[in-house]
Length: 403
Image (cartoon, rainbow, N blue to C red; front, side):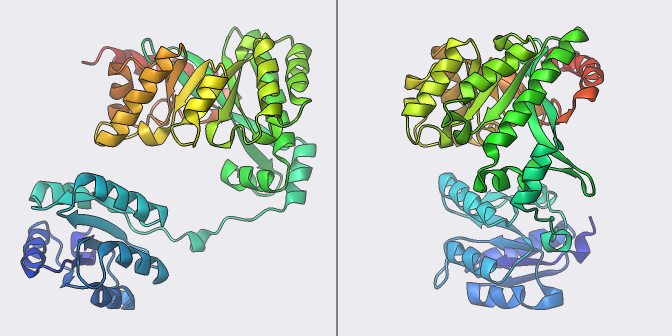
């Protein structure tokens, strides 16, 4: 990081704070620092072209245009830099503000409470990375017809992300995640597939293909001596189809795969808009001994109602309450409540979004049942899983014995 070349703007209505922060930045080696005391002046810097700031240290409570209004203006002015919040407001308000800024796709380097200390400022600025401009590498947009043809031609394949037992590190399950092996464009990821499928009533066909591929893979792995449960995400369109339960039963029977190896993940925020058909579908799946998981727990609108009405086998705590929960008291509280609720209801609990060693230590020390995330393993082709498991065993053994 060439600190001298990074352009920083300090926006604070207190001149003492401006001078103090500018001095601290200079001490850290940042020499391209400007200051101003109001949002309108700051926007002039944003629009300045070659001297546009790459980082803005932003106070929230300012006269004329407060920090929240300023963020809205930054979006309108196509600001492509990062923000660092520096404020005397309470931590919960700073958290809310950070979520708002991130919803606008503006990176937030951190939240610093006044008075600011040099080590905290330095640590926050170390997170800065040069802006990535999505419009320079725009993703190709595909049509519903192209996706429909891909489903018909079986160009959709499954990648598998591991889930491990926290207590032992054993790999006991994987989640099937769809990819499109495009004949010309290579591998296409879910962010270009799922929404397109949902908007064009193709998600039911897509899910059925993912499920069939997953069941065939279970059978193939069992032939190699690997016994794994495979989780498949199912949609509202699947649940609204009276034929879906029969389809799942028939697909498992065709490959002679026992239903307990198939876990169907239901995203709670999309569940039960009309209770009758989905409840019938889920009840029949349970009757046939398939396992059910409530996915992204904590992000929907009627979580407790769903837990009361449906006998789920697994609860997945959404990654937003797992990753960095050791530094975020609110996320940690929601994580603890979700974990305790799942255990009281007799469900296995999965922590999603385990991205680093701190997250892994959290789920291990809190006695969570299973963990999933990039720290453990990224989604991978089926052919790579057996080799990955051998590598994971070595890593897991190390971490299991760490204090």
